[in-house]
Length: 443
Ligand SMILES: Cc1cc2nc3c(=O)[nH]c(=O)nc-3n(C[C@H](O)[C@H](O)[C@H](O)COP(=O)(O)OP(=O)(O)OC[C@H]3O[C@@H](n4cnc5c(N)ncnc54)[C@H](O)[C@@H]3O)c2cc1C
Image (cartoon, rainbow, N blue to C red; front, side, top):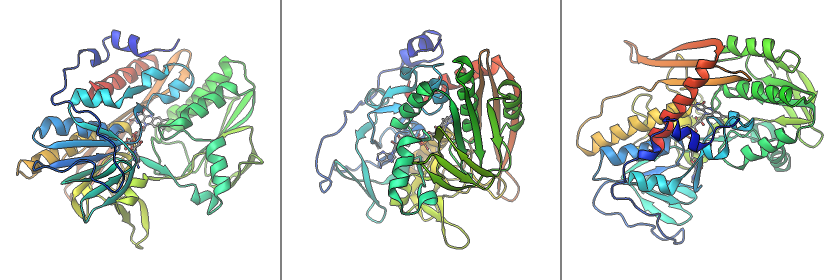
């Protein structure tokens, strides 16, 4: 049975129902052309937040609380937030659509920042200006939380037709939009045959979630007596994180359904003939979840925020100060969430997780509030916690926790703790974790 929002709130898990009324609630702003100012800037400091996902929602809420005299404007293209966390469970009807979705306008009214639904078109850091589909806005501080984009060019070069066909027919559903609905439809309509899923080279959004998805699709096949087989084509040389927990689930629960293939670097995809060639072998498929390599979202590129590697080539991710999260080249521009680039020679990137984006949002809100108050902010580090459902009946999950500290040389170090033993209490913890996040983002 799926869980809906009302049951979730009634269970006492979320504090949405009792949320305090917003201070200075503001309505979305009105309608101009791209070449006009959208909202004149007054004397108070203005912070423009680009992107209303896990990072953007958090930083907007906490800025309003910690810097009450500042103007906080959050820009986002969608009217409704859709949560990627929990969306694998939604694919197999453990939760319903309402459970994952929240209206931006209601949330912004509750928290008292201004939400403007628009497409962000350009960012001129020299002029401190953001151009949107509704007009331009000047800022004092800019926070970018643009999430990711897919790099289909790595597979198809300039072949737009193949890229578009792959995106439309075999979406990976790693960005919150219509792709999720297309994937759910494909799963519920699947009559049997070969179902292929690939994992791109790291870093990618939510590294354990493709394995969770494979388990839940396999469970769906079992439950509905679908004669399907899943091949996981992993660019990596092994399952990570929570490798033992996932491998045990593949072996014990889905032995005849899931085949895991490591080192399967994608060489060629033909979305029309439904064929994929990899370094570990070639396959024909009936359906596929094809995940092109991930990069920082478009906005980070538009803002000139992408870092360079030692050879001077773009890394694909924002070049930030690892501790303070501002651009190395611009102290007034912060990047949070998945778009953040290299932070440590030990573990390279923070896990690209909603939990981390939420923590970044809290941390950067403090940094900016301190600076507005004329003080020097003290560096803070996030943590990360992630639960993965591997069995639908009985419901059982595994988990992983990451902690961070700074060592004597000023380098951020990561410790990782895998909880590989699948069990029901981790499912309950997962729902409690989501409830805490929902409280923090929306209540
Ligand atoms: C299947 C799946 C399962 C996951 N499970 C978990 C989990 O269990 N736990 C966990 O912690 N994380 C999980 N994640 C990862 C999590 O979803 C991301 O890490 C998180 O969304 C990152 O937050 P963000 O703010 O960086 O980006 P996003 O949440 O993607 O937000 C970016 C926002 O920017 C907006 N935007 C981008 N460009 C523009 C533009 N030009 N104009 C206007 N708006 C724009 C987008 O519409 C979007 O709303 C999962 C992800 C997936 C796909």
